[in-house]
Length: 230
Image (cartoon, helix red, strand yellow):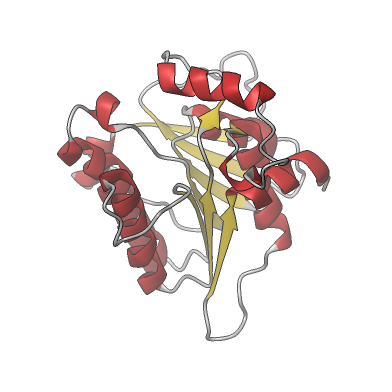
């Protein structure tokens, strides 16, 4: 299989890339990035296309032909983006543009990280944007659309996010399962990456005319991350 990975230098994207390379089914991973270090392991089946999202928007780069699946791990925060408008551009416009190109090129699978609580009718701007994106992706009718809705993501980031560090600390001692709150428990980025690959290998695109949409909620992501080997 050949994979296009978007957001491959982010928290989950890096875990996806590292994990994909362990599976012999994966013959090639194409990554778009402004900066990408691969000099230490030149024999890995990675194609790096150095480009910005502005290049993509301007048509200087495009989703390649012959890809089996797109993994979209793009995501930011309103604080880091600087405004709601910029946040929407990164978390809505870019993924949707990639998805539309993927659909035009008959790529059978599209796998994307959104967020727990995604809802196009939400009063929370973040959740509303994620929900609107999910709705638009569903209208494209991919043979298989995988949607992954994690709670607060934890892991090693290049930048410090105080809220996430607090969430990580709380997750280490608060008994989420005891109070029936497992679905809200902050989750390791590696677990989400594992669930995406699990879906890639286990969920097959529909051979029928009806498209398949599968949503993985946070508690299921935890279950796969902890318990499944494949």
